[in-house]
Length: 263
Image (cartoon, rainbow, N blue to C red; front, side, top):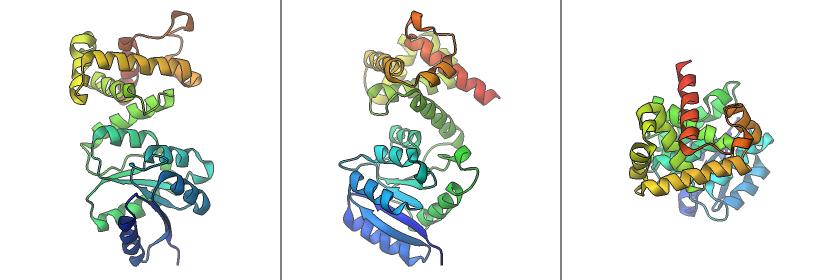
């Protein structure tokens, strides 16, 4: 009988042991490995090429986000589904997880029956022809689906630009773009409206937000993917003119996404 192969990754060995017992008792899943850190998990995934990986994002040696990114970038692991099972419910972590390719995000504590149902669902989806178009659209314990879709679009776009998720400006830039898509008025005064609004979300100052966004744009222009930036911005920003200002960058990306939603 065909069984869905699974690798479990969590620093709590007792948790993965019990989850393994419960999953295999269903007769549907076969747990081919349990790992306690990111590097052990990566080697295990390469060896077994499981159908699904269920992991926490808080891992030692190699963090969960980096592990997910490695899996999604590996051609022979394209059809490996990723489910995050974490106690972290903050939207910033959800957005980072989606940006690197998570297929489903579930917040602990969870219902075992619901988890197994989602695992079967994700396995079916990632093996199907329409996987690329719906990857990341199934998420537990988040707000309305339309808002989640917008956040996914923005985080994916920032990721494509080559801005790494581990810099502070990544989160600030993402939220600034989302706010600008939803309300164009914030762009009429970035100093008095946009920066303070983002700062309030992250319990920091407007000055810190401005500085961090500037750094994120500099990273995109110096180390990002040139072909992606050219495709996004075209000839609007020429190299001899230098990098766009914060407001120019946010405004252009927000307009681009707004037009996409309109279409």
